Image (tube, rainbow, N blue to C red):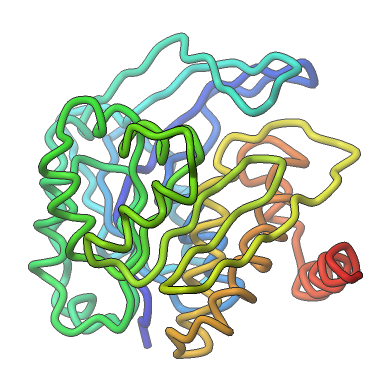
Length: 301
């Protein structure tokens, strides 16, 4: 039974890093998130692709137990494409070219079987579309929202409207400072909680993540990776594994959310070890648990 719906982009990425290059590799926020969630729960994906989208990518998702009924194949256009590169500072992607293709006219429509999902991840898309998705789901237990600086700059009021409607907001540190015009992440978190969400999670890249709730604070460490090939999709892998873990547990409690952040960090750390989904394809439950235990040891004192 589907217990998690992921709404966002599927893409074909061309990425170059100091450690290699891939062309037209499987990418997109919803792709990374749903695949990562599948290690813990039964996710469904909502997105759009063009006539050029390879069928083997859909089969890959299905083999992981991801429902693809919500993926619309638009036979009149091309799949969203992103081309970019990283230098030795892997925290910042440099965009060379973006071709929206059919994603430019994306209007999420949830199949009936998805509307009862108790967990919803709204990946980085137009906040107006995110609001539309929230109107389609019936009684979710937990909604997680991601966004980016583009929407902060161009649709701030709509974004604030969505933030007021979700349970958990996910931002990176730069976005949190930008949205609330403060250098203090503590002040930014307090401003979010006043709007309505129960929690805010602030991603700090290789330096881990922060969780703020009402009167509570949790700091998750970064994993000291020796081999990094491509960080593309790490933020979405983090989010997908996080909400996938919660969906698998059927929980919205802070105790489980703290564990979920660590599981998200674990899966994201594996994702960075290869291009596209290549490392996640080889990932096992035993690998995840072993690194989870390493995270526990990292933060012992």
